[in-house]
Length: 251
Image (cartoon, rainbow, N blue to C red; front, top):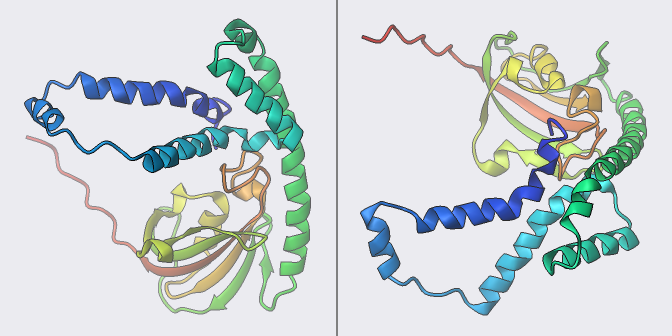
């Protein structure tokens, strides 16, 4: 994720949900009145329970970087309960924000270092694969199948199929699972991708292994990619796309 600010957006989820509800009640579109009069079927108890459960899942996302033990998580749950039932001081909670942020930063740094140690061991073993090339940047590039087409430059757009995995094999992203290739800017992707794409020819299939400083760094991309995580991508370069024609001046 980007800044520490964005990592606290989960705290505003209840306000965001409220604003959506308010927007629905102040619509001026005449069709909204007709929609209300239709009286859609009320959700069942089971459906509401499922929705409330998912609300809890959404709220939990902001806790990943704290690396909480079960005992610590129970303290957080107690705080949520007391806050919800107005048994806790809002002023005290606001005053504690710097301490909460400091705790998050400290826990994230510990987690990132743990991931980096595991990542270095994984990279060292992967470097023994036939044909593996360790680049000066730290990128490990492993050719799988060779193509014969053009090689993209940093200024190009490309079409690719890919799968992204954590070093434990967990798939966190896949164009094939979405059912279509991805169109990407060579300059607009994470650094290891940008470098690797410029080593490939159209038709190539390659495995690229990215240390954290060439991927999402010490912030990670929560909830799936932890701070300091080394990432593995299998990439097939399908084509270099024609540049989009520049639009002429408007009249």
